[in-house]
Image (tube, rainbow, N blue to C red; front, side, top):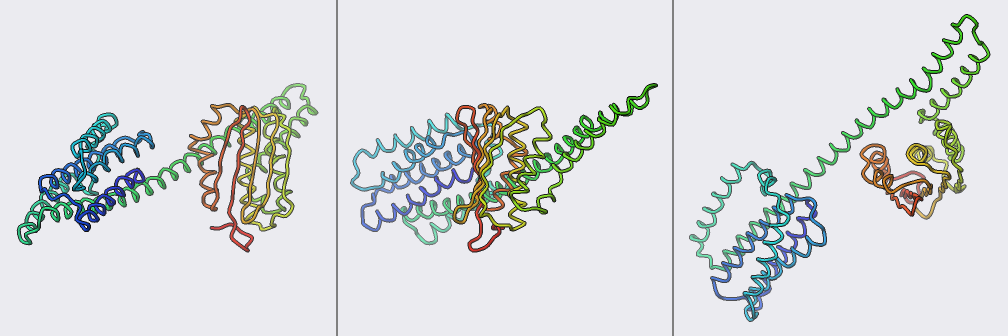
Length: 386
C-alpha cells in the first residue's frame, strides 16, 4: 500500500520544487487569488488521492499512475505566469480527480483511515492546533501569500512522509505476523497429514494382520507378507520425514534418496524421472541440506498435486548462483493458480528461499509446469548468504 502512496508524495515534492524554480526565475503568477486557489485545490486533491488509494487495494497500477499525473501535474503548471488556458488545466485536474475518487473510493473504509498515525480525536485536536499555529506565524512574521502556501504544502508533505513510514512499518509487521500464522497452520496440517498416514498406511495393516492371526485358521504367511510390506512402508515414511538424512551423504546421493523416498509414498504413480546434476557443486553440508529440503518439497508437490508422467530435474552452478530447474507435465491452469495463491507449503518454500537470498518462479506452458529456483552464494565462499 505504502508503495502506491510514494508516487503521490514524490510528485507532491516535485510540484513544490517546480514552484520554487518558477519563483526563482520570476515566472510564478503574482495573483494571490490564483495562488490560494491552486494551493487549496492541491491540498484536497492529495487528500482525496491518498484516501482512495488506501481504501481500495484493487486499483489498476497503470490507471493509478495515469490519474495521479493528470490530477497533479496540471495544478503545478497553472502557476506559470504566462501559461494560457489555465482554466482548462484546472478542469482537467478536477475532472480526473473526481472520476477517480467516485469510481474507486470505498466509503465504508474511510472511517478506518487516519492520515496521521494517531486516533481520530487526537487528529482533530492536532489539526485545530496546527491551524491556530499557522495563523499565529502568519500574523507575527507578516508572511506573504506565496510563502504561506509553500509553508502549508511543506507541512502537509512532511505529514505524508511520516504517514508512509508508519504504513511501511505496519505492513512489515503484518507481513511477519501473516507468515508466522501460516507457518503454524502449515505445521498443524503436517501433523494432521502424518496422523492420516499412520492411520491409513500403518494401523490398517496392523489391524489386518491382527485379524488374520486371531482367526481359527490363521494365515501366518499372508500375515508375514503384510508385516514385511508394512515394515518397508514405515521405513519409507521415516526417511521422508527425517531431514537429518540429508547431512549424511553427498549431494547426488541425497537427491537420489529423495526421489526414491518420495516416489515410494505414491506407489500408484509412475513418473519417469530425468536428473541432471552438476558434479562441480560443493560438498558443504549446509548447502546439501538446503538444496535437499527445497528439492524434496518441489518433488513431493509434483507427486502429490499433479498427474505427471515425467519429471525433469536439473541442478547446476553458474557464477555465484546455484539453480534448480524442474519441468513436469500433467499440470492444469487451476494447479498453477493454486501455486500462486498458496498460503501453506509454497509460501513456506518461498520463505526458505528468500531467507537465503534467492527467488523462485513458476511458468505454465499448456500442461507443462516449469519451476526455477535461484540461490545466491557468497563470493569466494562455499555457503549461502544468511
